[in-house]
Image (tube, rainbow, N blue to C red):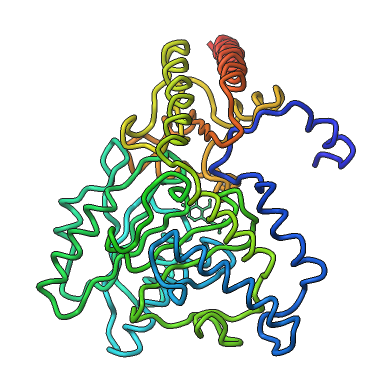
Length: 411
Ligand code: PMP
């Protein structure tokens, strides 16, 4: 463990390239939140002035979010983050079906979803509450649409496919999937719902749920320059879903627990800021930096490869496989140089199993170990990228030398 005092000194002149793990809170977001920690501290469920003041703030955030997704305010359910939203979407929809029909539904997802989606599905399987199909992913990191069409059964009730993969940043064909489901639904009595975990896509891509035919959409505050511990689930009106929590019937009886008012206010503001930006312009700026990083690394570091498609990729993600070096060793060495990157998603980093995402795109177990994720954000500059490239070159050279020397010793 690093001691507090030492941590303060270590913080100077750091370069942060792990925006997919979390983002700093925007100054305007923090400013909007602060009064709700202090003088406006009411519980939104209270009938008196303080409660009403808090409820007004929740309503405002709900409408800021609804505007962004082109949906009704009532269709937004506040949660503690994308993990809870994904659990609610998957378990809540299958619970409704199971209770009504006393039969197991069929759910389709992919092999490379975030663990909170995969583990929600695995729990349902273990409880004998659903049959699940895990769709394969091609080597570019894109779900195979042919497999999706073939996987749909009579009792399929839900298709859950992420918008942007959190490790390799590949963008899934959400619009096409929405179209496929709409077409299938036009010929079926029992409708298939479309859920997407859009956590990593909010900053960059189209989130018009009506246009995309999305029934349920999950996202989180801390990936969009908002606070941690808050998120939301969009649930289209009349969607057959049941709450999975016991407690007070907040959020249209879909969620229990006192509202996180400062968090909700911050979430609304963070979304409002994204809505006010020129996405095309912002994406172009980031894409330029990302492509510069990718080009330089592939050119200047032998045995380096980009994981996932270059084209169908989030503008902030560069994910490399580098031969003959360990990802963790590279991460620690870069950290010493003041550069923060990641080897896998922050949620699974303590689990030293090979990444299920990299296995899903066809990497061999041993190839998964030398992978490194760089995710850019609003504060990334060309200078920071240049410093990072130089440090990475130095790191790879140093680590390859060490492992070469070790191998020599065992010869
Ligand atoms: N889904 C995706 C794609 C994510 O990247 C994350 C966070 N790493 C989550 C879900 C979980 O989000 P939260 O931290 O808000 O629970």
